[in-house]
Length: 51
Image (cartoon, rainbow, N blue to C red; front, side):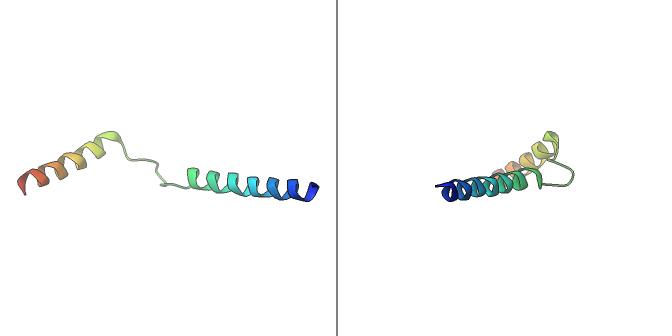
């Protein structure tokens, strides 16, 4: 029984480490600012309208 609990605890630790790694290993400078995203979105909308 103790071995099953130990294995479950190990799996939980691995899961937490994977989630932690994926959450905090993103872009080096963080997410781009909102106005930068708005400019790129508006240009793609204009391109779609002109097509």
